[in-house]
Length: 341
Image 1 (tube, helix red, strand yellow):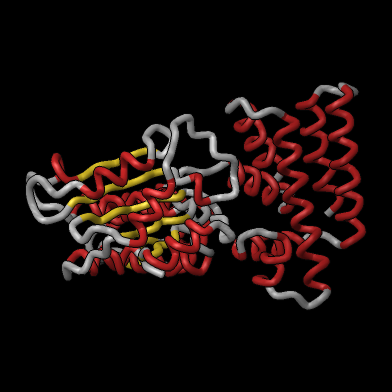
Image 2: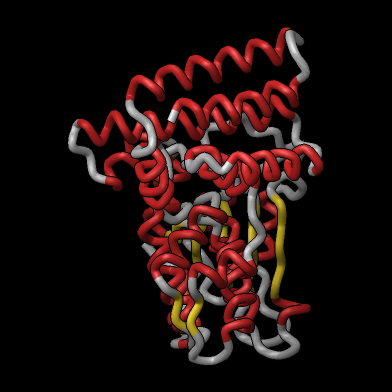
């Protein structure tokens, strides 16, 4: 398996292979790889020797013919075939007629002067297909799968080091909570914070809070945290802010209920001896979110949380049946939760 860094080393050392298969849904990895292929061509070569085709628009035999054409200027051609849906088990909705024997013949005997890159931006390929087996045997395979949380942490540290800054652990955790393991978003925000911190500077949790836009989930967490702490005025202020941003009361209620279900979940798992990482895995949330939910769970006993979840279900019913004004239901709920602590 090949990484983007491996590819860049191949390019630098002049060791490009004739066939590459990029497979996965992480757009940032795909785009970075394609940029590396494009940059491998010399000045003035790209206009003549770099071609990008979409499987849905161009017959595959036409792409093969281009790959077999000698470079006009320079020593190498690069041919990109995007959206190779035929490598998956999904229905092929291409409206053009493809001749796959020509493609298979090329894979078996690729020309030396062309780098042929097949891009399959899908979660998985159909390993039963002959063409997939053949490509995986003959091509350099580059996974473009979304990173795990641990991989994203490592990537952020490496990215920070490349920008001559340090990023604290709390900052990486908050970034993951706000952005997930989305590399394009993480890269953009880290580069922005690097400019703010300056060379050899440090990105802290406070830096992230100041510079990285909050998500709706962040606001809901803040709302719940204020409720848990009994800070009703702050909680009501956050709720009104969300309403001003055109979030519907029932949407706010649903997210508050989700957060309290997480709080109940970590409390139950804690009784069973689960650690924060185990809780996060079981509840399918970020470990940092599990840590914060565990802290909030300490404000309630199990009986109170069960009563609270029942009350949240009642509020949902009241909103959907129009029993009471929706905003008033939220206001009363915030006050009621404070009394259940």
